[in-house]
Amino acid sequence: MITALDHIAIAVPELEKAIARFKEDFQLNFEGTEDVQDAKTSTAFFPVPPTSIELVHPLNGEGPIAKYLEKKPGGLHHICFRSDNIEEDVARLKAKGYQFLSDEPSPGAHNSKVIFIHPKSCDGVLVEINQPGDDH
Image (tube, rainbow, N blue to C red):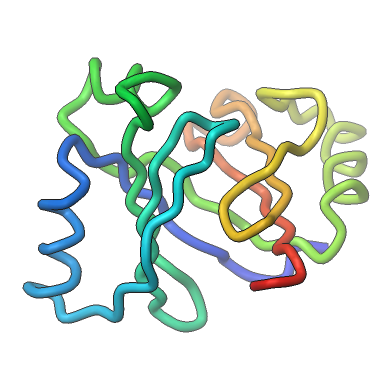
């Protein structure tokens, strides 16, 4: 079941500059960075309870965020809903006709499992479903 808005992701062309903006200018608590090899993404998290802002940047200049930034100078990339059982949610949504960008969840930040719903299934919005790992 979907239980919360987990985070809002913002694609950024310069990760350190964006971290400084959210940390210093907006005075948000900085949780740290993490590279997500499977997604070819560097992430930085700023908790804003009960959700988070996630800055996403291409890892080694490649991957889906790099392609996004080739088309746009940055901006809102996706919203993420937290799930307590991602497999059940995926099965339920597939039965309703939702299309996903992959066949099954993959590893995400904070030892989570993640999957993305194709934007054409959600009025043009990229939606992620995230089941947190035991350490988050």
